[in-house]
Image (cartoon, rainbow, N blue to C red; front, side, top):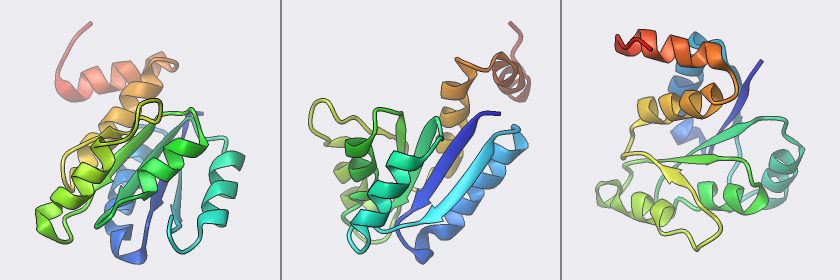
Length: 144
């Protein structure tokens, strides 16, 4: 079964992480939701990422939004960032995620756009699990 790790930087981000988890579960994806701060608990975050058997990571963070970038620096698996609107209309978080240095990419969706993060994770997994592609096409009303 495909697996995704959803990591949120704080309890205040947990609602968006739960939304991602629920949508992925509807597609039959196994999801592990964790609350781990890149700033307050970097050792735990590194141990979790390096020990995870997930195929994709989704990271929800606001403000400085370092979480997705830190995750991306610890793995070569795809990382999807979801910037949260906390201050500055969420632009601070968005820019933090999209301005990663070369070689450490973070795929970033729109501010608070947890739905696109979940769909992108399913699209990535569908490259390996064809049944997911069929479910996505069905959800969009597309036919192969």
